[in-house]
Length: 241
Image (cartoon, rainbow, N blue to C red; front, side):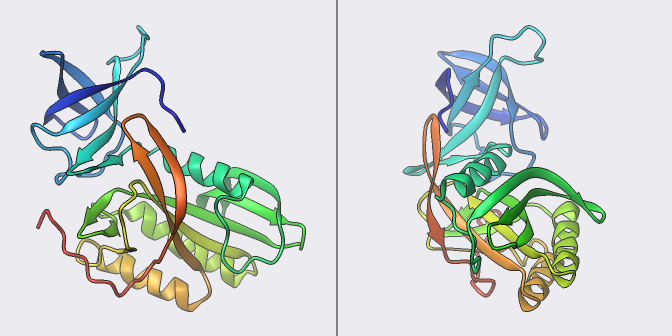
């Protein structure tokens, strides 16, 4: 995925979850932050960021903040892009579902099941049917990616619903889309949300697949790269604590 109309800026301050201020060619501008996570290790004064410009008078701001440079790598923080990458990656075969026999014959987005709306529903030519929930991962330290960077009630609910779907005979999976490239393994940030880590462990024990892919990211582009091991037992050292 290529972002049109991008420009390099310097991050100044985050006013709230949705709004920040950046410096563009010496001028302060208001930008929309496309991620409601905390991102403290990324969004600090002086960090290089990528903005996408929109010439739209109906918008409150003409800029979206889509990526941040952390040391030598870019990290995409666009919370809308993981679902798109997951959908397109499954369609073109870049992303492979673990333990699926057939080929995907049907793929739908945002399908309701029980009390949740899952990101994807699929059917294969081998009569397999299932649900996939996609979670973006932007938190990194020492080449370990972790989710979440803030407690998520919605994420916990989705995992619980996936367990019910699996027990009802559906394939069920959580796909973590790692929005950066340099990573050795992915895990759950147990210190941030221990109940989510416990629920993921329960889900895995009941046959819910949990897997991850990383992405190539530069100033104005993101693309799915390759599968990355998911290990619930990997210790994650939160750089913000």
